[in-house]
Image 1 (cartoon, rainbow, N blue to C red):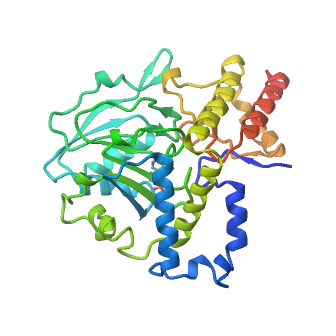
Image 2: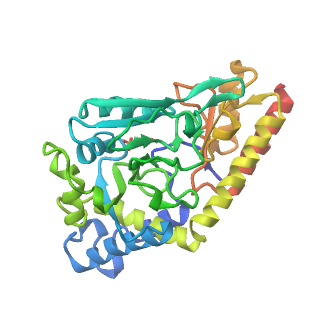
Length: 360
Ligand code: PLP
């Protein structure tokens, strides 16, 4: 039976990447040792690291005036690292809280920056939870940056346009990076915990416009200092070499699969299939405004919540696993990152249709 893993995390890696990593685990490049045992300062590892960066640059068309950092600490690291690196203690910064993750980022920033302005937040509307239109955001004059989360993993809420704002735009793309084409030049900083569309957890990627690299607060921990890590090519301290290797393999896989344009088409097709099933069947509902529906994380509720556990166990019997919604939201959540094939979405929709027929 094919297992389709709809888990929101930590990681969902393409089977082809895992198979290659398995084969290379004990013997990388015929050297008789694992890639984890190779010095990160050796020419062969540096070649691996540089190739991974170049492939990410090519995949995302990252302009030359941006640095790419491979860092420790996952996504949350940057909830503190962004204010510490990009804003003075006395600065004003704007936050848009669209769901659980950007709310945590907002609260964290208050530790490091005096004026943390809530510029907009998700609101209930008759058509579901919605992000206010960008034109209605209460942005501050002279803000050091505007922070938002384009895809809220827990809530399934997404902003599909890149906000046009005066201050440098900072985006937490942990659960949507590489999911579809993006104009990087519109951003000051993009950061992402690696574990959804890139590689293992505990690792992160930062794409930062070089003019923002001047460190603003001297108390920033040196390992998290973007300027230092850029100068040291992300090797100020020992990087997570295994995660970097796996991420590089995912980038190569993405290139073979047709890059982010092909991923975008497939991700939209998977999401469309599932939303159509939810919208056309009174047994299911999604509570997000159609304009803010995520293509990566799709929460839905059953008309009979008392059947949640039956749904989950019968789905698992069919190989459709980890569909339980986040405890904040309840119900179900289907996370369909790049590694989820279209056939997985189809199998889920087929199961949901049968389940609704039996229990509706
Ligand atoms: N931001 C978003 C959007 C996430 O989905 C997550 C984790 O899933 C995080 C931040 C936190 O990442 P980490 O657990 O790697 O710190």
